[in-house]
Amino acid sequence: MLSMHTHIHTHRWTILKGDQVEVINGPEKGKQGTVLKVLRAANRLIIEGVNVRRRTQKPTPNGQAGKIITYPAALNVSNVSLLDPESKQPTKVSRRFLEDGTRVRVGRKSGVVLPKPEWKRENIRRAAVGGKDTLPADVYEVTWEEYAAPERKEKKKEGPTFAAAAATKE
Image (tube, rainbow, N blue to C red):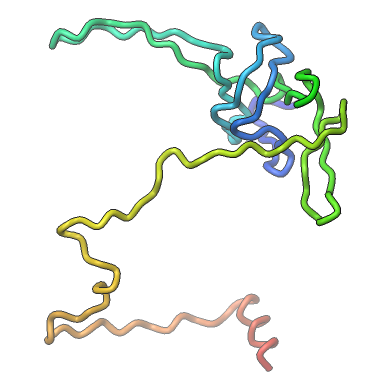
């Protein structure tokens, strides 16, 4: 039996963000939804429209009215099963290798390949250059003539990783 603090190894996870799943155990049994977030360290999933909680927000002093906020809470991954794309029924998942060597998820009930869901990064990481930012091409340009860069010590080349690298060079 798994304890609450046991972590399932990442190579064993078959459920990914964007998958269609069904709750197979607990008070929400039978509900289906899309995985919004995978919390691997806690062995939990957040599923759209399942295990919805309500929280009240009090009115603020500046006149904003109070309101009730609903949000999906996390479920344990052991209470959820992937949906077979053909029958829309929960299925166990096995892994197989295609002829070209790619590893795929296969539903055990129908034997159909379960495609990985496509998702885009929500927060796009951009290095926006503003008026006060230094351009990447200008970073190493010396603009102060009297500046002398500090001398850097050479890193010690000791240890098993460097010894193995030295043996391959000879």
